[in-house]
Length: 197
Image 1: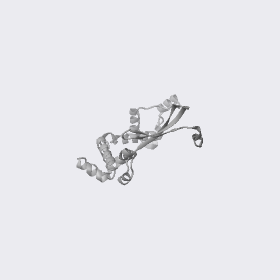
Image 2: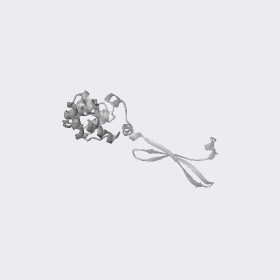
Image 3: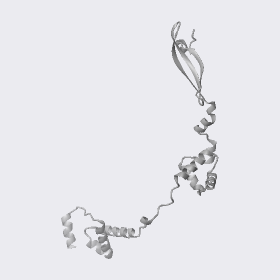
């Protein structure tokens, strides 16, 4: 006790750093002494700290986390891709229908796993999926009927001088064929809302 007192006088209020081996030795000795006596003898470290170190030693001894295997293995990326593809190509298929199709291909998967895959990929359940049309599907279905339109202006020399004409054109998106819809001279009065002479 006197040695501890002298040591405490020399180090003052500085904190002593212990390595794990020193903590283990102090904790093992402290556990053998009654708490009341420990309060009188321990001057470097408080009895509560010594007992906390001891509890940590015991917990570490029985800690089996190093031997634990990871949880359920992740679903293979090719299975995730296959489930996503089936849901995209068959919008009215539900989780169980996709599960059955996977089973036919030799992949055993729980329907809940199928549901989780689709949820992670941001794909809605079958009722909502079958009622919605994506932009890509709309374009694919109506590609032959979609026409874009626009206009441009062109300056042309005429017998009365330089004039600007407006050209309206249409383009079939599927073939990229362009049709001229009309050509009209531009005049300032049209722009102002009046008729052009």
